[in-house]
Image 1 (tube, one colour):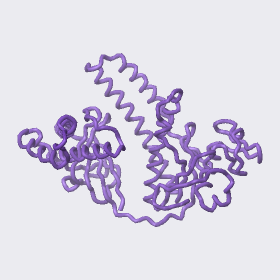
Image 2 (cartoon, one colour):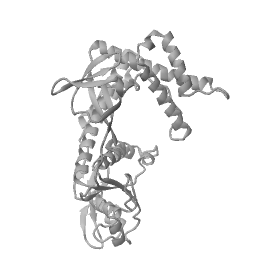
Image 3 (cartoon, helix red, strand yellow):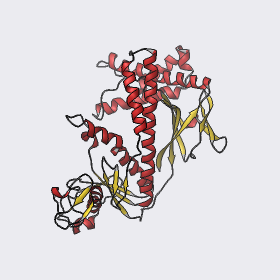
Image 4 (cartoon, rainbow, N blue to C red):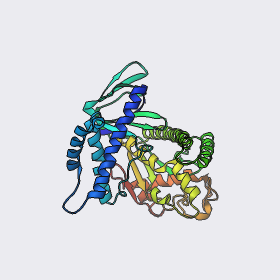
Length: 386
């Protein structure tokens, strides 16, 4: 059994768009009200949780007409989200919950049994949202499995619906070959096969983004022109993110279809992108290439096909020769060129690192190359490799 999300672009009528905004606003109002209650009125002997606050929301819906127009499940889901946010805070996994805002949190969630989807034609389908009715969406791929819930949200490019589905699936262990993957800045990924892949160039969109940022800086904060310019900037940023996400999904799907095991460096991307003097350019490059998202996307696609993602110790993978195994910092002549000073091997530096990563992921190769330096490995999925 696996869980997958299916996201589609909604095309509501003007009346439906107003109703969607009202539902998102009511859900945000309940979340913020519950957060304020927990933060302000908590004291020993009087605690708030999902159960107690859900009773109060039921009473509130009976007194406030515009809250009664919203699906009760959407409001209770907001309380569940807040309960989980506090659980993560007390477990030291995240910071203290903050208020939701209209710019960043315009969404609501409904139960799977409360919604339905139907196909209209080859390109279009419709989803029935409680108390709103049938809303058209662009049908880009078929839904699979049982729908657990659906999240309706708005971003800079419009309204979307995301179906969370549970799919019966049992994948047999993959017999496809293995591959090593090195992540970089000049090339987003390099495979041990010699392939070099990079995210598409977005220079035109980046220039438009910088210009929009400069214009926004000249606008008076809180004015109508400021709000409109901020929306323009958000649309450009969303387009850039979608271009990169499209490439990431295509690249990871290609790797998962061709290989049964992928070895990748065990990198702490959160620590690597932490603020530091002289690191702004490097941090921006790492975030733009999306190292962590590439890793998580590749992991679930491999698992769905019976494959495995292995994370290995990255120490000296870029300095070690993939042919003779000698580690020499001076052999890395430039960002792209590796010329071993001991055996004379010349190879692309990223490809050389990817081959070393692949070698360290295999128990048999670990025995064969035991003297090649650190070679610890651990798995992301369920199979123990080394």
